[in-house]
Image 1 (cartoon, rainbow, N blue to C red):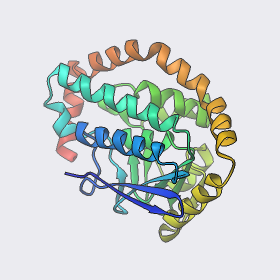
Image 2: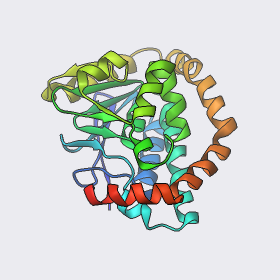
Image 3: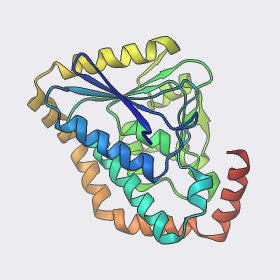
Image 4: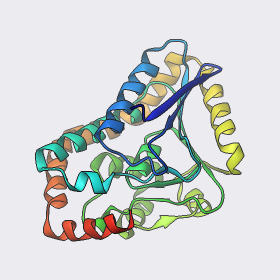
Length: 251
């Protein structure tokens, strides 16, 4: 089952999450995202990427908690490592990457958006945030480090410590998004930005992007195994199990 829609427009690859309304993240979706990123990376006719959703309700709700909650530790570890790996693939993607956020971007969905170079969100009640603290787990380490780099330590502290969701205007104020647009303009403006960036000298853009992300990437990779182990300890703790059970009721 294909969980993404991939189309091309003016040398821009438009990759849309397409797993129901919520685009909840499971191993199949994460693996397909990795495959699509590799396909776009290897296609010399494609100069940039737009990551979006097939609907205007959710960009992604984040982890598929009802499915992942049932997994034994070794199977959840496979998923979690694959998620972190694809986040790093997207964050270090050598071509311009724009997140077209037409719906809520929650937790893991918010992290995917953060891994892109720019984030354009629809105005209105489109929420974005990292609520992991309310589930008894830390923000995945790549997302934590990338968030600090994007919005600064003070804003990152508030976002991660409270687990709150934010409306578009507050997201713009915090630096989580770059533009707030009418819903119907999010995808066209994202494609336009991707096209403009993709028309720039490719090697120079790749080098500039690499210079921007390489220190964050290095920090993540040094500590990732240790941080993944700690996340799993939290995920299977009694405290998190109770919080996750409550979250499943609302999923």
